[in-house]
Length: 109
Image (cartoon, rainbow, N blue to C red; front, side, top):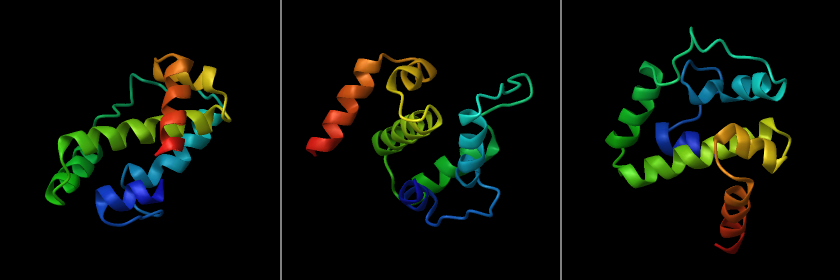
């Protein structure tokens, strides 16, 4: 995940305020299955826009931004669900078969 952060933002700032820097905290909350109060949490906020803006300034195209976002979401969900693909798939709103195919595809490339 640090590589993803470096690719999008140009640096990895574990102590910074960026959204990517807070992923480890977010993963800990997800892994404990805490309920996030969605009435007070907007995931698509200014920090999200800042990351996308940085990616665009670095010349990253829409396709790569989308793929990186998908890969990051899958990584977070699988980690939070302790590698249980069925639970991770449910969290992501996809089938566990889709995650299996994604994993198989990554292993062959």
